[in-house]
Amino acid sequence: MATDRYQQPDYYQVDELLTDEQKLIRDTVRAWVKKEVSPIIEEYAQRAEFPKQLIKGLAEQGCFGPTIPVEYGGGGLDHISYGLMMQEIERGDSGVRSTASVQGSLVMYPIYAYGSEAQRKKYLPKLASGEWMGCFGLTEPDHGSNPSDMITNFKDAGDHVVLNGAKMWISNSPFADIAVVWAKDEAGVIKGLIVERGMKGFTTPETHGKWSLRASATGELVFDNVQVPKENILPNVKGLKGPLGCLSKARYGIAWGALGAAMDCYDSALRYSQERIQFGRPIGGFQLTQKKLAEMITEITKAQLLVWRLGVLMNEDRATPAQISMAKRNSVEIALNIAREARQIHGGMGITGEYPIMRHMMNLESVVTYEGTHDIHLLITGMDVTGLNAFK
Image 1: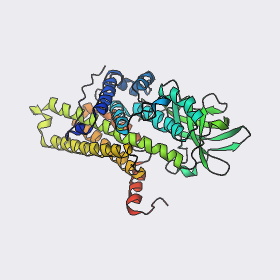
Image 2: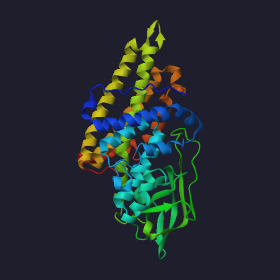
Image 3: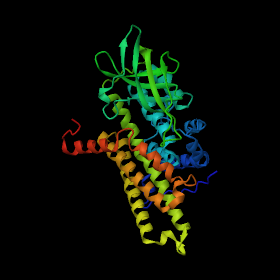
Image 4: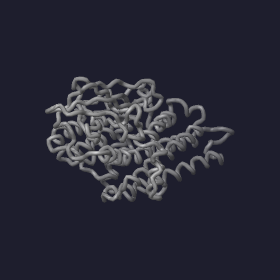
C-alpha cells in the first residue's frame, strides 16, 4: 500500500486567513483521506471500481451536506469549511469528491432549498448519514451544455405523474437510492422530481470503459413510464433556476476540489525533484525543473486566494454564479496544467500507479467537462463582463 507523504503548499500563509474551526475540519478530513483513501485508491482506479466502503467514512466526517442545517442531519458549517473538505477529498481522488459533491450539493441541497418540509424530513437525515445515497439527473444523451432543450418529461395521471426519458453521465447512479431528476411538465416547464429506486420502469445501467474517474461509479437514469407520486415533486422552484442553483453549489465545491488535485501533483513533483538524481545531482537543481515548480506554486497560490475570497462571498450570500464559474474554470485549468508538468518531472514513473499524477490527470479531464465545460464557463464570464450573450 502507498504511503501518503503529502504536505500542503501554502506559499502566502493563506492558513492565517482561516479560523481555528476551519483548519480543524480540514485537518480532520486530511487525516481520514491519508488513512482510508490514499492507501487503496490506485488499486480501485486500476480496477475501475468505486470503493463503497468509503461512504460510511465520508458520512462520519460530515462530508455529505456540510452546509445543510443540523436539524436535517447536515453539518451546519460555513462555505469555506465545505470548500476545504472538498479540497482534501479531491486531493485524494476526484471520483471520491464527486460522490460527496453529488450527495451534498446536487441531492441534499435541492431537497433543502426547493423541497417541502415533509421531503426534507424524509430524505435529508438518511442522505446525511449515508444510509441513502443520491444522484442528480440533468444531462441527457443529446442535451449537455443546453439543458433547456431536455426531452425527459412527465404527464399528470391523477395522484401521480408518469415520467419518461433518460439521463446520462450520472455519478452515483448505479448504487443510488434516490435521484433528483429534472424534467418538463406538459406545459414545458422544468421541475424537479425525487425518483426512488424500486419504482417500476426506473433503471440505472452502469457506464463502463471510462479512462477517467475510474474509481467513481457512473451510469444512466432510464425512465419508462415511471409512476412518481405528486408529493415527490419539488414544490418551491420551476424552470432552469432549480438545477442551475444546484450546479452553482457544486461548482463552488469543484473550485476547491480541483485545487486539491493540483496541490497533490505539485507536492509529489517537488518531493520527486529533490530525490531523483541525474547527472550527479537532484533534478530540482536544474533550471527547467525549477521553472516548472515555480509556475506551479504561483498558480496554486493565486487559486488559493481566489477560492478563499469566493468562500467569503458565499458565506455573505453575495457570490454570483459568474464568480463561481470563474473559480471553477480557473482551478480545473491550473490543475490540468500542473498535472501535465508534474508528469514530466516524474519522467517515466509519472505514468505509473506508484505516483498519483496520471490518475489525477485523467480524472481532471472529466472535471474540466462536467458541471459546465471549460468553454461554457469562459462564455459565462464573457457575458458577465460585456453584458452580451454569446450563447445565442
